[in-house]
Length: 152
Length: 152
Image 1 (tube, rainbow over the protein chains, first blue to last red):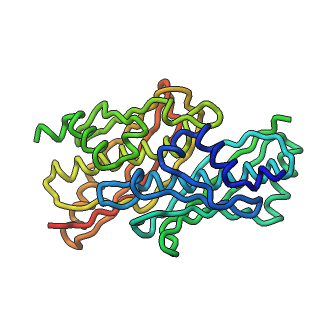
Image 2 (cartoon, rainbow over the protein chains, first blue to last red):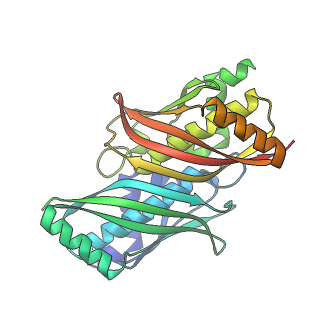
């Protein structure tokens, strides 16, 4: 299970399989079933104002949410495919340099309802909240809803 | 004003000023104050399922919404900066090839309230809806809220 908490293993996987993570310069700072932290530099994500493009902030947050759920499913040895269902992002402040997305695991109750539904119906939804941080403040916040489909 | 409806002029501007539009392979198919249509290929936007990454679908839709408002402001000769405030995206179907984002202009009433507020307060919000299409179906739909700040 060591590989599941190896930031470089996740980073390689993202770069190989989700091409935009590479062109955005995404790095994995932290990965565990509790929390995933991804970072990205300004340069490949810059917009007309010299700040981070909203699409890049959203994408980094989605990648963090997806990576967290992926890690949780692997940790619990649940074979399932994850697909994004919807996302809501609030952009609160301009991001003027390297930024990071912090995805926190859902609480135990939410996870156990999700796991129960997935094993019973072969399909379940779950929400993940992600903070996009710049210089210690929450510059954007994503709420993503994902659907897991059992492929056992 | 010819440049405002020149797809290549907008494409060059996006590629130069919003780096992700270039790495996503964004092309401008159509631009007018009524409608902006952007396209992107699958390869640079692929995910672990071999379909388009949700972040790329969102980003293309945001770029289309932003481009439409940018074109509308220029057409009406309103000097203002545009910033995204929030976005909501529903992902309805997997995208397995080249995809496009179609941003439709807000109705005349919405535009005129926005223009009035912007000239009175120097700041106004506006919503734009964008369909992300693949093979003729709406595979995703974005509703983006933007804030314009007058810089006259």
